[in-house]
Image (cartoon, rainbow, N blue to C red):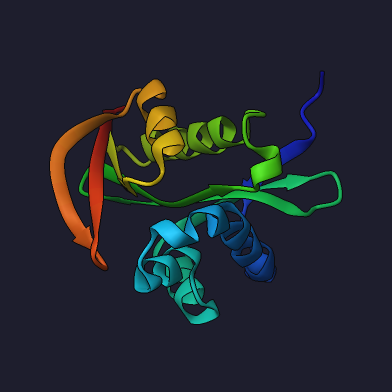
Length: 157
């Protein structure tokens, strides 16, 4: 079966679709987040502009070019960092997250990264299992994210 989406680099015109994707993906967790953590996760248009200036952003787009998934990443000193990964709930479990993560990791390898890190919050148990199945391991570092625990993960590339 042919996949019903493609992965591509985001353009500035994708901003509304990316913000919608983040909101849809994280809405089920709103009550588990502090208000500030939720806002920082789903982004304001201004925060998105800042992220777009600092990171590469990929999207998964369906056949109608509707954004159903996204991931952001950057490389620094031989290490990649992933942030803002989200897939519409109705498209979860269909390989979209795996394809986004795989493309980001491939791009980071091309940027001479030897490892990649990411952080996630404890309410995102499904995401934690996904990252662990994808080869990420908890580093043991826990930091504060607007009053929530932020769990650090790393993977060698």
